[in-house]
Image (cartoon, rainbow, N blue to C red; front, side, top):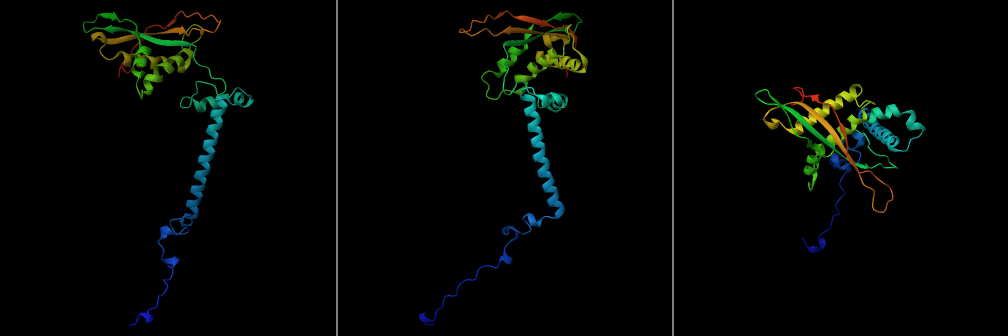
Length: 235
């Protein structure tokens, strides 16, 4: 064959029908490949997620925003929805930082193997938590908030005589007993913990040097009675 007889035949474009299903926008892998029922399920799921997120954000906003007619009208429902998983400890437009340092102390009555009882010294549980947190890049959530939140919730449940009220107060008291027993550790002083007593030591934060406000920085104590430790509390 002579070079002059060589012809270049243009290559035909591939037939769209020969493409793989994944390469076609309207193939079985695309939305049109779903059945009508599946499309409805996907659409309803997307709508439910959007509506749920909007409701959640609205409730949280009403909880942390300044008091208004809508938040006061639905205060019970908002409280039930947020507590305890989404509870807020501050306000959106007016944060309320603590003005005092609160430390929770505990001591125990220990029964020795021979049946004699002894009382331990007061142990600063909050200081132990702060020691675990200090200089720790990823401190545990329990050491940051468990004791503090439990004590605050318990104090809020006390009546005018300093007694926990209702089921919530009883649950917080039992919760504090378990926290104290676990922090004191098994085999305290070589015996078995039979009762624990807790107290809080509240020391107000002094006023800054530039302030003329007088702050009494003396430590005050809120002492609770002895609480019995059950077998389920020591587990």
